[in-house]
Length: 377
Ligand SMILES: Cc1ncc(COP(=O)(O)O)c(C=O)c1O
Image (cartoon, rainbow, N blue to C red; front, side, top):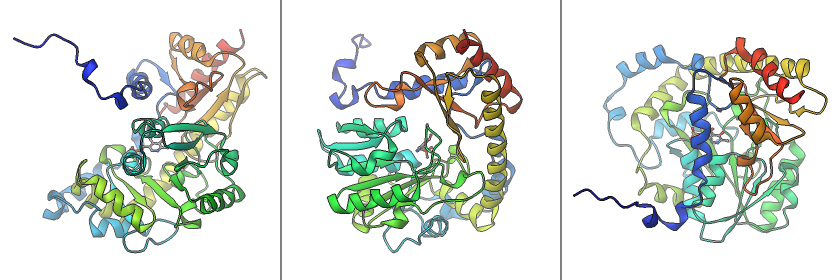
């Protein structure tokens, strides 16, 4: 006879934070095609290199169909490493199954129950989840205060370039101050560079990892620049740290997909990634400009927003509860993400994230007008 009781009581304690529910709710909103959705941080499908990838698949040799070494195929590591702003030395780079796996491997390798982690707030929900799932105490500070964190954490997590969800970029002086603090206090900075290559004008500041490869592990992804379905990313950091992450990966998926690795390697070698990046930057710059113009044209004085110079997001500050705003917006056929899930401590109630990456360009004005109508009441 089939078991009828609930399995919930048997779930491991560390999985009961509920932190996973936020992302599921956001993905649910994106899936509804009837909404004008500013919700998901997904790339625009028009950037996907479908025919080029089909061409490459037909040309790959058997290594693409085999298991790969846990730290990644050598050719893929070469291709990824050559794109970073510092050439990784031997053992300083590994290939992961997406950026989220790099974060998960760092959390798994470093965190015991009760360890302190500092994150910038607001921040990427997936990172909060990764740290929480290893029972860390997650402390949140504004990005500009990270170098003055009142606790000495084991890990400090930041997204310095076109941050998710604020869209903002960390100035050079703050980068320098932060790595100095990490050196002084002996903690590891986890630098997430998910949107780094998507500056609208292509300009970048030095990565934290290039400034201090002794105290920074960089987590990267090809999801926003190639396509997320390939599930490919990297971790670059001190040799000893990368070796520990490789060891942790041995009992998760053992290796990132060889097929994905060989595809990306060939895509880079043919120069196609740079062509895709140029087209993506132009597309996202145009969509962002349209969003900012629409906000300026229709939002009341009481509403504020950030003006990103790259990435996928603008961050809205409204006078009242943004959760209620999001609920009423759905009734008007518009999806936004309220700010609270981007904070580990319940703040963000008057914030919302607007993503311009995937929304149909021709619907941006209408979507913002509907939102503004709710805020003008
Ligand atoms: C800041 C940040 N890091 C990492 C990721 C996850 O990347 P991946 O798809 O490679 O797991 C995202 C995706 O939304 C992100 O916004």
